Image (tube, rainbow, N blue to C red):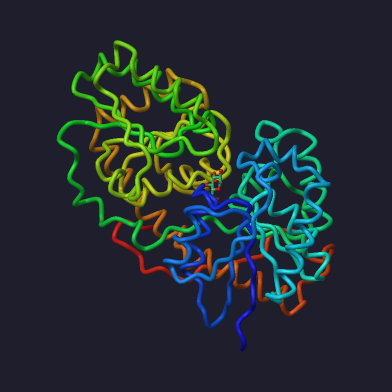
Length: 409
Ligand code: GLC
């Protein structure tokens, strides 16, 4: 069988969550089945990282006034300025002659749809954002929902929570962002706990990630746990410097003085996770998926997370014991108590973290994400995707059996 030819479109080459998920997926694709080119609308660190895993990458620069990097600038996607870019993109696509165009960011979804129409190729949307008004401007959310229903050949979602913001959809597929083998730590039964407790938050410094809520909880914990230290891992990425300044001033408050460390951007989040006693996920708005939660579990680190969005699916999988503590978004007192529980009862936290490690290893291998996407592309390449109205609901994926670990049920 000749490999299916896919062109993946993303508007940014910054390493946001969706882009890191893409990077791992591309690395896991079977070249005998998929011939992939990633076409980015900007230059940036993702280009080299994709190339380092052997991917073919092209950059076709979109006017930065059109391609602002935060999702709120989507509303400013000016139709007129976009026209010449769509034409250039269509020319590029014609030359690449893909069977399927796959888009992985909202801007790429919209632009890719137009260019895909011009070259008459099916366009699969890979949605990593909740299409909800607590997350996007209302008119933008409405347009995206409409196009997802009527114009995309198929919609792939990163979580059930994301799907819920788009349903009803004629055809959709769930593909959780996968964990690469190197992200999975050894059996946490052998995990050496840090000698001094350290509680950390990992991710871009942004109001959507809740570093301020994390530090508010830290302030309440500081007195009760005199040896406790806090780490803010990550840096501001998408024009969020003002928020980062507020986070730094919060860390400078007297109760926290000298106890909060900022690592800045880190190349190896796994090593940072290994140093933590508890990992906190504090997003005040529901996270579409929340890769860092699964990543912490893959290292055997106890997790305290704000509920909502995809995080609920990771932390409380249906029919299983919870894999961490969930607290209500914005509830600083609840967050504080949940962290305190994990610190005062480390054995319970550790045994739950070990169950979580088994769970995420089984549920989120990146090979599965790659296999699901490959099946989607093959279906559309053959043009055999069933008529939209004939196949409501998600496409089924039969998981490959994973050899059970000792504590797996
Ligand atoms: C986006 C979402 C995040 C998700 C990631 C991968 O960055 O905001 O929740 O984990 O995509 O799907």
